[in-house]
Length: 386
Image 1 (cartoon, one colour):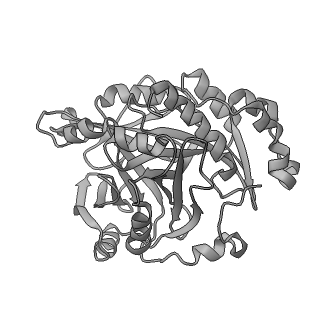
Image 2: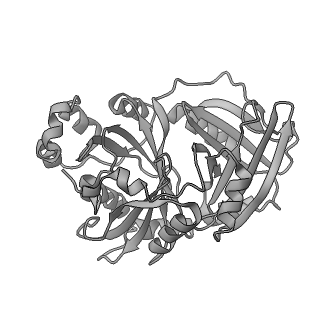
Image 3: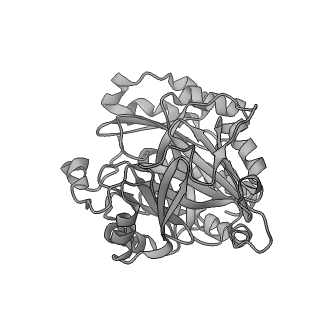
C-alpha cells in the first residue's frame, strides 16, 4: 500500500481544516480550450469521448471574433474556441502553445467577492467582474491569471437559466454518439518550470486559500532516467484539486521538461475525469480510437494483491481484465483506485487525459508512478525527446 501523504497519521480531514473559507468553490464550471479548428475538435470529442452537443456561439449569434462549441457529458462541460480573424489575440495562444487549456472556470456563489478576495491577495487580473445578460437572466464572471497564461474564471450563474452563457444558443445536432461513462472532473494537473512549484503552492495557499495535502518528491517520482516533484493543492471541501508538477534532475529529459518545451511554458498537463465503471469506459474509449499508454509489465499485475493488502477483500475487478486494458490500480489508507492515462491528444506531446475510478481512495496512485513514468518514457523514446 502506498504512503502518499507525508503526515497521513493526522488524516485528510485534519489537513483540510487548514483551508480558508474566503473563497468557497462549488465545483468546476467549465474548461475552455483554445484550438485551431473548434468544429473539428468538437467532432473528435463527441466521437472519441462521447460528449454531447450543448451550446454554440459564433457569427450566427453575433460573435465576430471567435467561434465556440460547448460540449457536455454528465457534470463535465468543455468549451472549444477558435479565433475567426488574423488579428485575434487568441492566435498568439495557438502559435505559442498549440491547442491547449486557457480557462479553468470555477463555479462560485459570488463572482465579485471571489474576484475581490483573490486580487487583494495578489492575483493578477484577467477580467474585471462583468455582468452578461440575455432573456434567460444574467451571469457574472471575473477572471484571474494562475501559472503561465492559464486563467481561473469565477462564474456566478444563480440568476441564469439559459443553456450555457449569454451570447450562446442551443447547439442542436443529429450526431450525438452515446456517452462513455465520464462523470466529472476529478483533478487537473499543472506543469510549471524549474524551481517554481513552491512559488505556485504558496500562491494557491495565500491567494485562493487552498491547502497542500499531498507531496511527492524526486525520490518517490523517479525512474532510471528522469524525475519530477509534485504537490497537490485542494480547496476546503475537496471539490477542486490542482496538483502542480515541476521537473527534477535526471539522466535524461523528463516528461515535464518535454511538456514545457513543446507547450512553450507552464500550463495544464492533464485532466483527470472520474467514471463509475472504468472497465466499461476504457473499453468503449478504446473502441472509439482513444489511444492509451502501454501496459505495465506482467509482474506489475502479479504484485497487485500485495500492493492492495487488506483492500483485496473489497476488490471486484478481475486482474486479468485490468491487465488486458492496461488499467493500473493502487491503494491508500481509505481504499483503492483504478486509473489509466491516454497518450497526448494533440500533435504536440502536451495535453493528455486520465480516467480514474475511486473506490474509497483519495490519493493519486503513488504506487503507480514508476510504472506510469516508464510507460511515458517509452513514448518519449519513440518521439526522440527523452
